[in-house]
Image 1 (cartoon, rainbow, N blue to C red):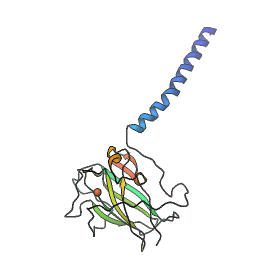
Image 2 (cartoon, protein in one colour):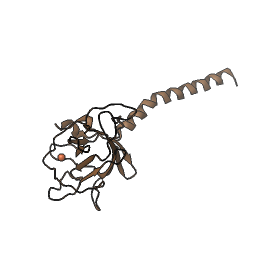
Image 3 (cartoon, rainbow, N blue to C red):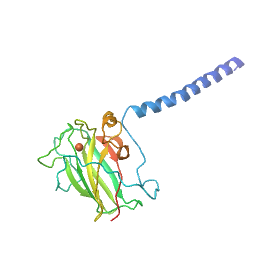
Image 4 (spheres, rainbow, N blue to C red):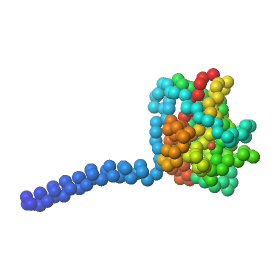
Amino acid sequence: MNRKMILSIFATICIIGLAACTAAPAIKTTSVSSNANSTSTLVCSAGSASASLTSELTEGPYFTANSPERASLLEDGMKGTKLVITGYVYTTDCKPVANALLDFWQADANGVYDNSGYTLRGHQYTDANGRYQLTTVVPGIYTGRTEHIHVKVQAPNGELITSQLFFPGVVQNDSDGIYNASLLLSTQSSSDGMQAQFNFVVPAP
Ligand code: FE
């Protein structure tokens, strides 16, 4: 192998290396912008010892009392993207709350509420570890509102918190006066739809 060949091989390696380095940020940017995935840090995760109360937001005009107790709001033939939200209910010192009430209600994929029945409405209680899981569909937008899921959360004998959950990457978030970034779900696409996480923080009884 002569000196010219060695220099040629060296130059080729340098060019490949440079290309790999300059290409890396481009790949990263593409993967973030091509979907609405969000991996924001969940409150009370990663060893946190305290957290602020979940922000309260207006109940809005479409709450119906006495929703059925159920963890899945999905029904046969329901349109939309399947969504599974999991998380915990904590107190401000990041202690999980067992038996906490979570009452969810939302619009369907077309942005329409069932105001005569209980479609896409249901309440459930956290398990012994303070965990909940909601199976539903991604709600549609309606006039003036971005995608959101309404919720009431309450520790046993504690103060009731009324709030809403939001979705990252939705254009209408910016024009919705009620939207609050502290209430963004952490979302990932799944094999049959979307999965998401959110941890609530409620006043201790
Ligand atoms: Fe609403």
